[in-house]
Image 1 (tube, rainbow, N blue to C red):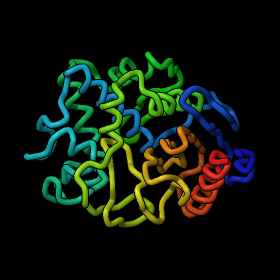
Image 2: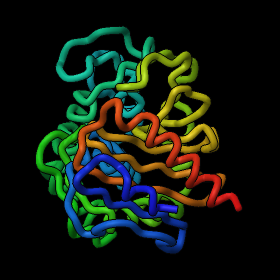
Image 3: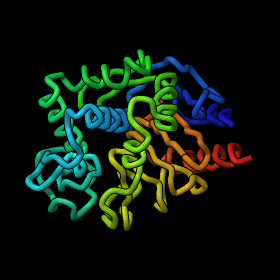
Image 4: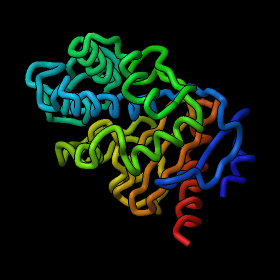
Length: 268
C-alpha cells in the first residue's frame, strides 16, 4: 500500500505502517534523518506525560499565562500566541495553536527536574525506546529530528504504552476543554477544534491531513517539514510518513487520498 509514495513530489520519502507489535510495511530509507517540525510536539507531549507519572510536574499545576496550567499548554488552550510570549485570548477561551506553549512547558520540566529538556527527552523517551536517531535540536515545539525506524517504535508506544500507564495515555488522547474553536495550521478554522494533551484529535474535522476514512478517535500530528504520524485506535495501527519537501498545496490531496487508501487496505 506504500508503493504510491514513489510518485510523491519529494526528493526523499520514508514511511511505515505499524501495528501494536510490529512494523507491517516499510518504504524508503528507514534510518534517514528528517526534520520533524511540529511532529516534535508528540515527543514533547509524551515526555511531559512521563514527567507527570514521575511526579515532577502535574497536569493541573500553574504554567504559562496567569490562570493557565500544564494541561492548558498541552491542549493549546492557554491563550498564548503561536510563536511568542504574547497572550491572544483568555485561558480556556480559544484553541490557539502555540509552539511557544510547548517551549514554556519544556522550560517548566527543565526547572522542575534540573535536567535540560533536550536531555530529559532523550532520557525519558529515546533511550528506553532505543530511538538512537532522534534528537531535539531546538524548540520543543518544532525542533526535533528523527527517522521512520525510531518513529515506528514511538508509534507502537502510543498503541501499547510502556513508558506511561494506559490510563494516562487514554486521558492524553481524549478531548480536553470541549467546544473550543481554533485553527489547524494549513487547514483553516474548525468549530470545534478538538485536541488532547499534545495530540491532535481527528474527530470530525474537514478538511484534514488524515483521511476522511480515519476514525474520529485517530490522533497524531503533522509537521510543516512535510511529515506526519497518525494512530488510529479503531485499526490498532499507525502510519508514519517523513519527507524532505515542506508542507504546501502539493500535500493536501496526496495526504488525504493516501491515508484513505491505507485505512481501506488495513480494514480488509
